[in-house]
Image 1 (cartoon, rainbow, N blue to C red):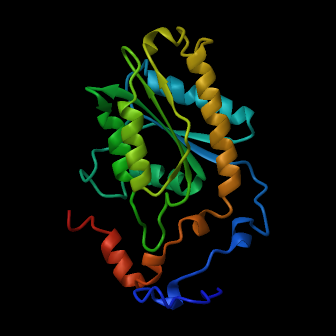
Image 2 (cartoon, rainbow, N blue to C red):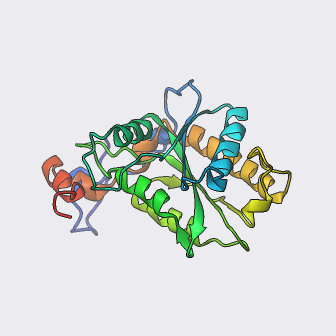
Length: 243
């Protein structure tokens, strides 16, 4: 790694850990050839779950764009901290997060916020597993379904969580108003501007995933963490025992 030529005006900088911009690193010498791997989470346990219907519709669209998709079904997932991470549903979720290169979070809005089912899934995803951050640098698209008029409270909250999980949350998003009227009896979404927006979001997510998946570690590499030892970083990130 090349060192900066002059840091005389930055006495607080530790030169060994300050890396000049390397434009070549943004273009991977080798490119992955497998299909983009997208994990979809939804936030309701209801039999007729509109957040699940939206996630399933999104998966169909992603598949048409050439992605490989998997949907995690939260039925049976215990409350966070109710049991250990060895629980089969927790292990399944964490394995899927490790497998994917991007995610879709689809939640209903309840009392002006994301559902508890949605938040519980995200809370089970650790910020770090040893020295590996399972979500760091992966892409994310956020969606919500509303029982009444259109709202953006939930997607805004999901964006905050995405940033906290160090995901690359794409600019576009979906909010489906009066979701009970947007899906037919079989759970398929009817033609509408809401449907078109989900197509837009999945198109954008696929592009961002293809663009970033081979350089994601470089995109989120941080000076402040390069000056920390592995032990110090692990102590700071893994706070589960202290919470």
